[in-house]
Structure formats: structure tokens, C-alpha cells
Length: 289
Image (tube, rainbow, N blue to C red; front, side, top):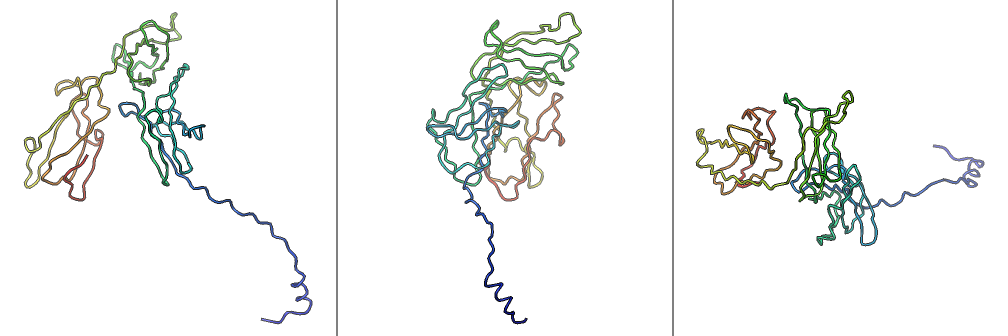
């Protein structure tokens, strides 16, 4: 420590220095919002456009990803109407969800919000095999609303001979399968044509645990198989189970583990490759969905 000299005191007294500074804007309060778009059966809907708007204008819009999620980063806390548009590659477009029509206004008020929407779409999966039951990876499928009507969508088969079509629910669709080969004199060869009508194949199976359980000392195991619409123990059909609700009711004992497996075409289901869902219960649970 030392005393300042006269010259140093004069310098401090006459000091004049400007500082450039800018104030940060007030952080905007808003929610991170995920809108999950599903068809009538709960299948994810990619490439749908989700709009958030008020009574007069569209405020935000995002397109759903491969798993049907449209993510909005910061949405100001408020009430919103939501609409969802879906388009086919050949140009057809439709509004498949409108919250204002069903009288629902959605409020976003938390830091993280997730909203599930079930829209007016259905999903049709095509899986085409050749005569030798190998995937037909050179081909396409034309979709129309009448047997000889205008094509509304063309699906290109992938390397596994598969393609997926999503469009308005409640209609009968007509399809034509073509084999594509540029080396043929006739590049596009019609192989099959038919129609698809969506059916509700809801099936309810009630299992009485006290009649089917295998006792292991003080514990027991319930091992049950549930088959689709056209499947049985001896034959696995083509109908796929795309949604299942499991309800456990009137339990007097405690559940420790719940595992769900899919049954393959040979009737097998054991092993991690077949495991769809597994949950270990650390506390005593008497009822669960």
C-alpha cells in the first residue's frame, strides 16, 4: 500500500472512459411442445403438418418426424386451436384433424407439454413376395378410389418388397401391383389387382388367472397366448396386432413382472428377440393397465 501522488490523483479525477454495454432482452416464457400424431389405430403418422393458431391466424407449424412427432421449441403460454394437414405425393391434401370442430381448445402452460392426436387417417401395409416367396423389390403399387379410377398415390416397393399407404379412414381402396424392370420390353407388368376395406378386428380375451396359473411354491406364473383375427395355434395368419390393451383386475396377489412377446410364424416366442414389453414391479401392485 502507498499514497497516490498529485499527478495520479489528477488522472483519477479527470478519468473519462465510455463503456459499451447492451442489456439482454427479457427471456420469453414458453413451453416446449411435442404433438404426437397417430392414425385411428394408433399408428404413427410421419410427414403430417401440425398448425397452432388462434382465432384469426396461424402462429406456428411443424412437420412430424418418422415417429409422428412435431416438436415446437418455445410456444408462449396461451390457448390454441390445432389443425393437422396430410398430403399424398401425387397432390391430394386433406385436413385430418381440427380441434375447433370438436370444440377443443388446448392450453399450453407448462415447461414441457405433450399432446396426442388421433387423426382421420388409416394405414395399409403392403408386403409383396414373388412366386418363390422372395421379396419383390422391383415394383410399385398404384392406389385408387374405384377399380378404374384416377391413381391417387403410387408406392415404390423397398428392398424387402414393402410399402406403406396412409390416407383417409373409412374408405375402400383399390390397388394394382406392377413389376418394374427396365430390361423388359414392357417395363411395367401388372401382377395383381384387388381392393382393401378396413375392418375393425377388435378381439377381447379374458383370462382367469386362478384357472391358468402354474404354481411354483408360493408364486405362480401366468403364460397365455393371444392370437390375431385369422391366427391360431396351428397357423399364423396375415393380420397383425398393432395395438393391445392389457388390464389386470381383481388381483388378490402381488405382481412382480409383466412381459409381452410376439409369436412368430413357427409358434415360437421365447428369447429377447421376441420381447415387446417388460416391466419389473419394485412395489406391491394390485391393479395396473
